[in-house]
Image 1 (cartoon, rainbow, N blue to C red):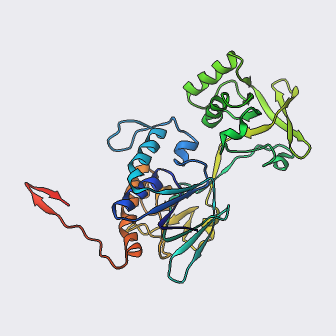
Image 2 (tube, rainbow, N blue to C red; image 1 turned 45 degrees about the horizontal axis):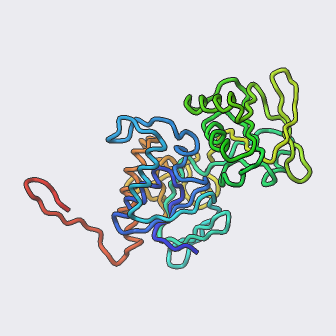
Image 3 (cartoon, one colour; image 1 turned 90 degrees about the vertical axis):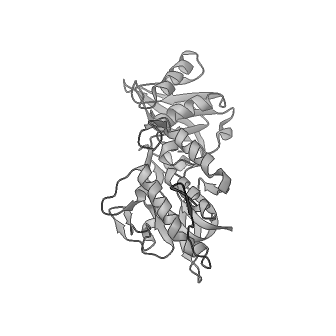
Length: 334
């Protein structure tokens, strides 16, 4: 049992900034996210993408923004449950909630804040006969612990940033790395693509372009994958692990069953404080909707600030939230 003031579902940029706003009001936060690292879409899908609409930064790299947010909230000592999806929400008699994860983690909180971006992310799985039979037995759709692949033979399939970045990273850990991509060019960052080509030229990885992953084979555990080239010729590759990285599909998931007002796969909120209509539950960021809604990170930051002001009354019911200030030479000092 993890006890906290606010449980934030989603550790993307808006969820992280909510920790800062809550921390200023002396509220503790625990974040839970289905992804194995903080940052949400920024870290998982496009870590190298430049972002141009963050105040004070003409341009900032997506991963750099996440790193800065983590540095900003460090003084408030948030705790995290990563790589675990929220499965259920149970309300206690006193109005507080138990947030229950897929690995049976239980987080007891006075307030629940849904900051799940577009919802929980589920991997896009290639349509290969028998693939599901090897899930957890050699087939994984995310790299949660790179050390599991040390000195192993691994096959990665995909052409985006995740496939490129993990190919580069695991080339120093695995005994053998093969990257399969259906095209002869990559969708990911040019710098990462250059590194992959350089690794292939030096013989450190095997690179199969214009090829498709078409079959999986083994007896209980994965032993081989079948790869078909542009000439429709299939070869079998001996491997200990297959990591298909074809992106993530956002889904609202179990949140849709919590009695919230859902409008076109988003949660309708009151713009006074971004409450959902269910007491002590708020929704901020891309997962909410209201008239005039803009799906921008900076809008989520604004929503996080107002949410924290409202949540204070549930966390500190005996206290009154007020700001006293004096004016010196026209400057307000709190």
